[in-house]
Length: 388
Image 1 (cartoon, one colour):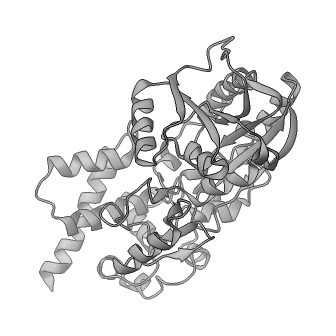
Image 2: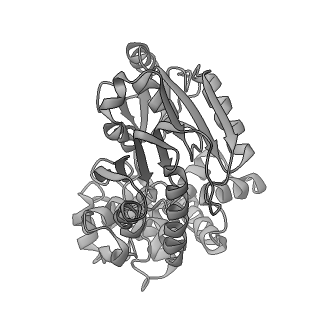
């Protein structure tokens, strides 16, 4: 028993040293992977517990700063635990029996200042429920997959045979535990795409009027890994895709993913659309601008950002978004559409950008709004649809 208890306190000491050393210069997941690669003494169970403690700490954001570092880590573990567990029992037994209480009750118990979890309340959109959004960071988001057309039954059968639990969010969307391993179960991208719930819900902004337009041309101008492009392909089917991004390495990864998804009829190229005066020579029925942003609607997956994100970056991203949006919008056909998307909750990156685009281009706003994930263990996204 003493050996087991000693091991749990060793986990706490290791987690303390790791968060002390981390500077935020790279994603914490990358840093942690490198740390464990350099310290071979940690087995898989050790890594799991230490990682859990570290992430529980980061989920506190800038709250509970009056506590010592180790006290904050244990507080984070309590707030993020959904049921009693041996690690919490060893570190704080009085809290362990209350671990399954709702997170708002637990935060009240420890007198947590919710507004300090997410430290940028003054930048939040008025459409976001501040308390619910802050507390959502104490809950690990689920893993979501989108089932490709015609593959729905097959995917569900494969998951069932593998013993992986899932919840049907819609006919094409499944929610799975965050730790689910799918590589050996599904043919990813061909049968199902790993894609957050609200990244999928963005399809609700796709113009219905384009369903009958033949041929249909779409430019995904900040395509990244291509998730939105695959979504467009599955939604419209007859679409002719053009995809671009700022680096060749991004395009190479996208092309590999398109091959896995059996998408062949597309054009890809590298471009920095933020360059002043940039203009593409072709016009499209739909231009999708999934703009570079703060990612603040996804920090439940990268909670270290709650501590390390710098407020001035909001203005940086807003300036970049203005350049990209106006340049990309020049490629919308007469009667065509422009879809602006971010995974941000900041007003400057969203509602203010919609106003800016409307004031500085011939585009007219058709619809705008948030896909709110903070009550669904999912990301929060913003989308706005314009028409020329």
